[in-house]
Length: 471
Ligand code: HEM
Figure 1 (tube, rainbow, N blue to C red):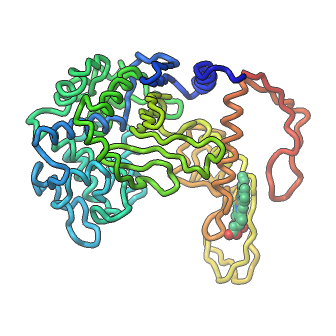
Figure 2: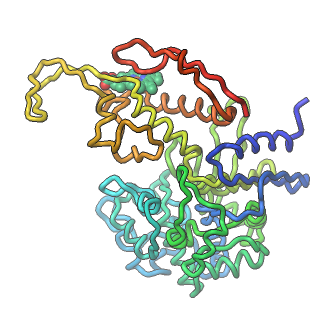
Figure 3: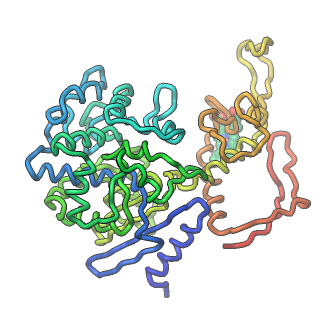
């Protein structure tokens, strides 16, 4: 007989919570129709809910709509001025900005570039800046950043959506203009106050000292101290809440206690893939849908969930078909195991498994004052390139804190013969190492009995006798 669901859930949660990089795991599930409720971890501990903030912003907009202050088809320019909207979507050489509607902002169909994660011409992102040093930005500055980025498509291009935090910065401006107040005030007077959510609040420039009340945000092994940055994202990421409060909010959101219930049917009527077609996340009007295709889980279909996810490993979802409400946080940035990523990449660099690649030159090549004549055979030493001190500081040191993204490693080759299996190889390594982390608390290698693979090209072990202690 299988154990009762609560015991099984606890077992899964405990395994996850024990991972070394998970700093504050908490989760809760409720099924109002049966009275079932389950939780694990400290469900009263506040944490940054990141992009789940958008659901609070949407709830305010739906209230304003109910009050007749706007409609979903109102052009944003009518509410916050054409100047703010100008130049925000110049796809195809036309300025579509002034005709973008509230609906297009909420549903991520505006085609407005994303100030937050979209790559700038130099290949960096604003998120890189945020992780590097704390700073404050005004909404105008963030919106201006988007103006300098290319738009992916014209507004309401059928089947297209693009996840852009800029959409919600603009919605935040709409809330401030229409209510003649701050977004924090709108949250407090319209949502947290009426619902009695005492542990849900917004970090603002006036309350930066409250940053430490929320569970620390981790990036790799470092705790991030970015209060000024977080306070710059009132409509798209500045809310702090607890798992308990989150569930109460979601039940109110879906149950008609924040805005007319029939709005929700409309918000969930049309979905567009918002990241790539391979990601199981679609966007409706101000709400996310998480749906794992049957082909990826043929024996145990995953029920459809609607709600929102947030960076730092946060989820808030309703499973309408099962009357289930789920809130969870693992409280670390969106990479599920940043240390595992670093472990894989630094190992690929430091212990390059394909040490060399062979080529025949098709033209004369000038390099370092010498000419390699056409038709010559060349041995490219990828292992050596990965230890080049012009690219990697102190290259012989194995260092999990390296920023390898900005340099790039040579382990899978480069150019048109770049390894076709690179993604699979990384995925396989991730699965193995995550399972190892889950199950093994310590290990010991019998170094005397290790042996290397004998090969001119392949670097690795033929034998690595290891004893492990299970968790
Ligand atoms: C850690 C594991 C792996 C490493 C280090 C690795 C490394 C490499 C390197 C360096 C190249 C470039 C060869 C060249 O430029 O001459 C390459 C090419 C290739 N790799 Fe991998 N590989 C790995 C795993 C895989 C896997 C799992 C697959 C397939 C399932 C795969 C399939 C290929 C193929 C088909 C090419 C040739 C691509 C072409 O010539 O266009 N590799 N690999």
